Image 1 (cartoon, rainbow, N blue to C red):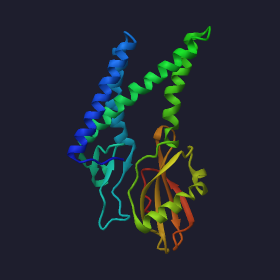
Image 2 (image 1 turned 30 degrees about the horizontal axis):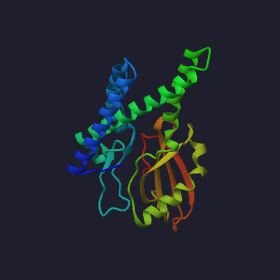
Image 3 (image 1 turned 90 degrees about the vertical axis):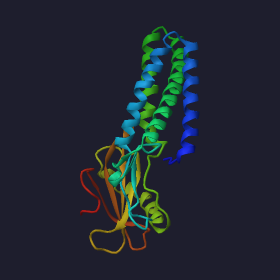
Image 4 (image 1 turned 30 degrees about the vertical axis):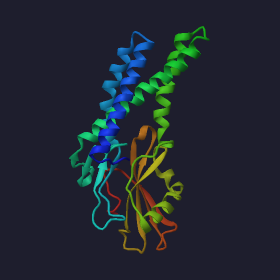
Length: 243
C-alpha cells in the first residue's frame, strides 16, 4: 500500500497518465478495434478502483500505536481513510488507482492478444482455442493473484510485529476451519486476549480466490508470543475481540 503526499502524487499520476496514453496509441496502431479495448479499460478501471475499496479493508488498529491508528480502504493506493476505514474519501487515491488499472488492463490485454494470436494460428479450431486461452489468461491470474501480491494490512512495529509474524507461521493449524481455500491472510490487529489469559490475540483477515474476503482468523498466542495455543475462524460480521 502506497501513501503519497501532494507532489509525489502528482508525479506518480503524470507517469501513470503518460503510460496509459502510450498504451492507447500502441493499441491504435495494432487494430482498427482499438477503441473497443481502450473503452473497456476506461470503464473497468474505475470499477476496479471502487472494488478495491470494498475488498481491501484495514480497520483502525492499536498494535504499535500510541493511540488508535487510522485504517484505510483500497489498494495499492488508499481511497478511504479514517474511522473503521470508511471515513474520508481520498479522490487522489481513487484517481491514481484508476490510472494504474488502465495501464495494467491495456498491458495485460496486449499480452493476451499476442499469446492468443500465436496459439490460434496453429490450430484448425482457431476461434475456440483463442477464446479458451484468452479467458484462461484473463481469469486465472486474477483468481490466483493473492498467492503473488499480498493484500494491504496493518503496519505494526516492535513486539506486536514479532508476535504477528509468529502467528502467520501457524495459520496452517487453523486454515482447515475455513470453508474456502485460504490463499492469503492480512493482519488486522494485535491486542490482549479477550478471555483474560496472558498473551496476545492476533486477528487476520482471510482472502481466498479473487481477493474475496472469507472471514477472520484469530490466534491466541502464549505469553512469550512464540506459538498459539488456541485459534478459530469468525465471519466478517463478527469481531475478533468479542469472544
